[in-house]
Image: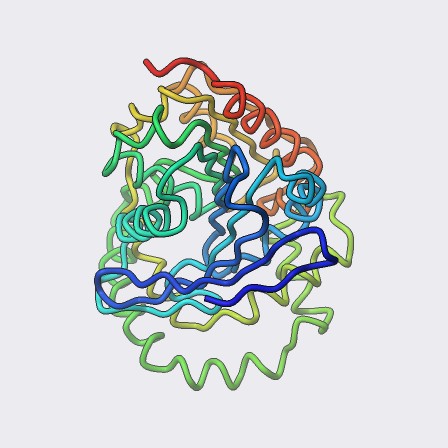
Length: 316
């Protein structure tokens, strides 16, 4: 573990947290260990902790004032984190988060924030380690995410055939990952066609060119293996009947009104299971709310931090 002082006000250190199967999770820790609340942020599929940079920037004054310790980390197989030997599943990501909490936040109050696959990671943690919620974990932000049904059962014969073919297609993509990587370099994030594809899939009407370019660069740094290995895991994720632990803490749910990856219905399903949660459907935004509306996401997290620092809603 190394440590450096940033602008003489924020103490920053990097940590490598080893999981049981040997994966090294790369984390960045900002702020004092004595802060009353620690915020841990988990990113989405084919992204990295940099996807939270805008929100982290807005939270920097709280970190500098000693009100908050902030931890961002790369999920296994993403960013600077390794793969380990375990099979790929969202449940495994939940286990990874538990290891990271035990290593970096062994005591004190915690708020968790998850974007997309990061939100699913938190749900898996809640299902596997419910005793953490209402005790150490005092609030949860679920941004552009889903509890399941991302790959609904096909309703016709053609759909069933495509579903059976998917594992073979994924294996082929994995085998050809190196070739695909070489081809991908010919269309860098700065290329207009690259940016148009990213914008159409991930961003809403108000997204700026700078936002789209930043997101494209983060995703471009991910490997094809991260894309293909986690795709079936996302389809298998289903925690719709295992969210009880989240009912013990304040929850903020945010989704863009034009989100194509985790459309509004997924957040409405979460709100139905967690009726005390605060649901916001954000107009003119897509899947990348942490970039498109960082102020709004930060305000939601701020409410959770205030509740955690003040004791929050009593555990059920």
